[in-house]
Length: 68
Image (cartoon, rainbow, N blue to C red; front, side):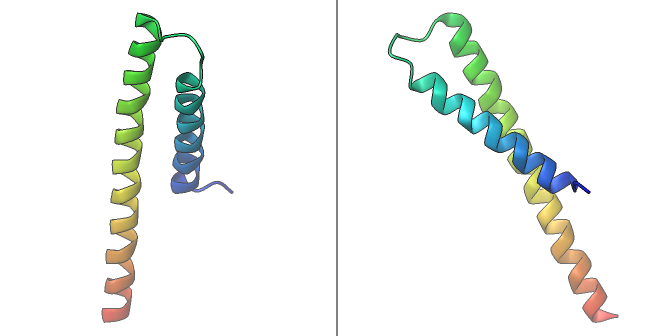
């Protein structure tokens, strides 16, 4: 079973790999490639924020369980 966090981590890894490949190209980036890079950067930021929320929620749930 894939958890939401592991699915997000997989997507983050994929996006990072594409970003690295993009910068590894020998030719200058085209306008289209720059737009795609920016889109991926924004998506990475959003996914990392979601991972932070999932992690914080898990910490709070464990604290509440211990307090009960």
